[in-house]
Image (cartoon, rainbow, N blue to C red):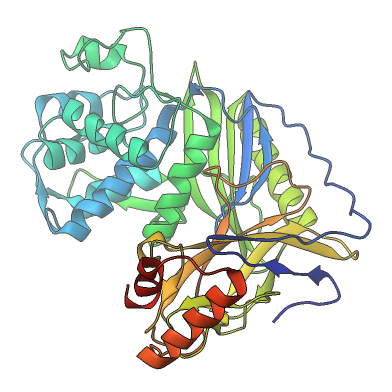
Length: 445
């Protein structure tokens, strides 16, 4: 359903590209961004990937344990692929053991004479940011931490994330690995993992999109590791924005803290409010007041100034001035419908707002003339539309736009020989006769 009191849409179609320009009669005032007390801050809507705030979001900065969101994703991916299972036993190497016994770091102390499952160590990674547990799971999946780091890099590259420098799975300064003879090849001893706030938001977005069940663990505030084992430890969440914590904010259910001397106090947060989920990133705050207090400000800013609006439903007709041309069909044009519900995130306003839309047809369906040919069945997906808000200068997370697929509204059968011949004669008569070759090719091709 389109909210006509606030939205105007108009589509201009063409053979390959069609642009919808939603002009605002009087442009609504842009949302004034807030300034956050940190090195970088970034906010997106999780569903549409609309950027709501970008403060130094493309600077490569130290990220500490926010790194662990990438291993979390790869654990889920390995389980989905069947290479490991939640109950798979995890062997503990000398390296993982030594890191886990360092009480200066966030850890659950591990032993070699005990059986831990992937689920046990996964929960320790999420709830307690356990470094030794992270290393052990990485070694299970890839054989070694450096090999797993290569998997992490490949995943970031596949997602189009740039500006990253990764050396380990945990976000610890490299000297910890160097002291134990496990430094990533050619890594500088005095460095640690770096990414951009945009990159961190991208990781969190993929994690929540593909494996939202991570939030069931991320929202745990208090859990005993290996309860009843004689080697148990009380894990208290580091996310102090969860319901019973000092910086509690309604709707917060994740996601990952990070702290080193170089990174400062950093936090990737997420909250759900009014059916809209936002992801926030704060890098390089001074302390908990900075990372959690500023995250609360970012969430208040996002939910207070933006709203998610449904502008079309699955099955709705795509509003076009011209229908899609179909070559060699009984009918020469056909309308388009949306394959899914269409949402946009836009500044809250009482003024009329407009969405700019661009239609791109699937090139694999086009003939040499750039047209889709009959026969084509009702509901066949023929392309997608990209939607953006006019006047928006922040755009979307990966540089693209919010997209939705479109299909033909009805079946178009192929026209018979006589119809095709008559159309060719009428067309050439109107545009000038050429050659017999043109005649033959016109409707036999």
